[in-house]
Length: 287
Picture 1 (cartoon, rainbow, N blue to C red):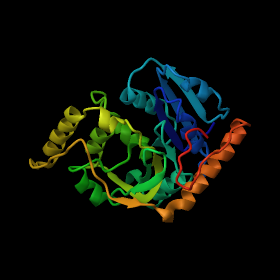
Picture 2 (picture 1 turned 120 degrees about the vertical axis):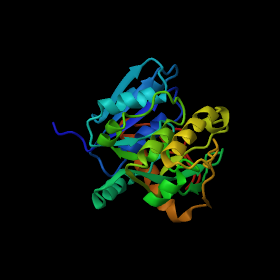
Picture 3 (picture 1 turned 180 degrees about the vertical axis):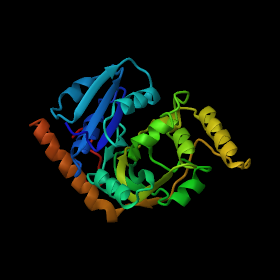
Picture 4 (picture 1 turned 90 degrees about the vertical axis):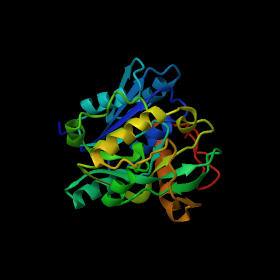
């Protein structure tokens, strides 16, 4: 059997509230030659039951004791059969044409090794009212890495060979493992973003950015970058600020089409699923 072009790697811990939407957004992609590797990282809620509701041959579901996201992602990458590794967090969604546009970018630039995207983000009521725009050129990503994390972790697609060459994620980093990896990749590999938001995140009242002190990890990354660039004046803080666009009306069609496709996928997987949202920017809690 032919290997898939893309392996989507998703780790999940107690994600019963949103994992259904995350899975539906992947199954709704316009590019369909992928496998979706979902690793249940010791969940104690109904996460596994929700995963088991899906009947799609592209889904590979595994369960394990709780190891944390970093080790879970490395396990998924080692199992992956695709040429490209696409990340997807279990509480976010991907816009329906994300994979299609990322693959086009790889085809247009054979030297490209990793590509992310900008993202939609909600307010705490679930309304998509902002877009975070990320640096869209390799040069801007290079200059940004010493000031903030220039990639949305869940939005990236990377050549698997590159990850293997770099020994995957550093398992000493329980948090900001993505930032640590980028700090190794960017000086040696061509990495950039698609400026268009092709990923969507829900902002919770309590999120890891607020509840987890990541100073220890960020200081290690800062030291690593200083050594690689010989610039001792670099100063990174755990909180990064990105340019925002309020009420991103120019992107409403792709967001609306994504929800439409997710709804259709939901109907195929579960006959009584109903889509409920009050506006173009409402994030349905359970499609």
